Length: 331
Image (tube, rainbow, N blue to C red; front, side):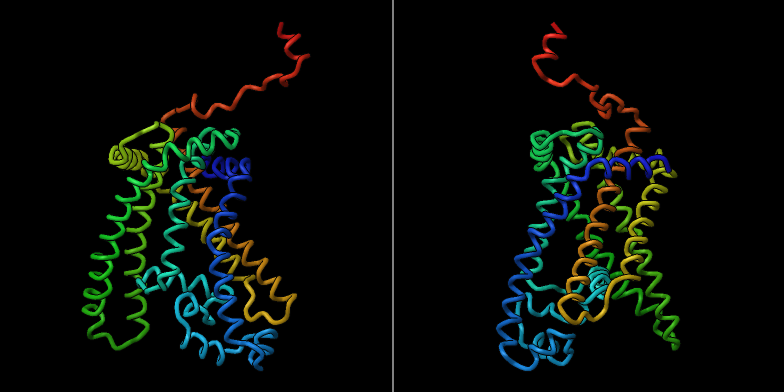
């Protein structure tokens, strides 16, 4: 567990990375929000529904709007309110629900930005000392194209999982298992068990690719296939620690989600309550991004501890401030 706590410490010592991750999230999401706002304003106009929308949620109008809307407008449903949005995204992910093209495009841009930032972030966590902007973006640039190649492998693996394994489990196996089941609760638990199996596959792939990124950065690897093979070898040789660390990180993520479920507002009415709901939602996003960074930082800590990359992680020695007096003392 030392790597877990060390990873938290490394993230907390680099608040600029968390702020940058949040800024990237806003950069991608704000244009979508502005576009949706324009569609809502045009549809509401000066109608009575506008007054009810300002004081609460008009579900009848929301249903009417989503039925005639296109693009991002079709996502404006009651499921976007509070914790329901988390459940809706999880359901869409596990059941391969379709999303509008504009959402897919924004998600692709978001993924590309994270691929670019990943190298600089992992490098910063591995060094555990300030690298300044030039050092951060230099590392990001060096590993961007390498991580693009790694991303191509990830896309192939996730394509196999969602394109072949997912239909096998849920379109073929599940109907056969519940064919003669008459109790709805039994069918629910069967599907839940299949979700767990599929989730474990996704988690295994995510852990391998995370350690591949860590090994690529710390060891300056150019071959991403070599990094994947090295990551598998590291996990196999250190399976109790690696799997335990991933489980601890996942429990941290689950705790953040559970906390949001407890405090997430439902229907927000009025300006003040709407802004409070917005602030709580942004706090959840920041917490979720913080957990993502803890994943990388703790995995880097464990890898370095087991393979003793001490020179890479050594903090810079304290230096006398650069000044004429300091130069005179040195002279």
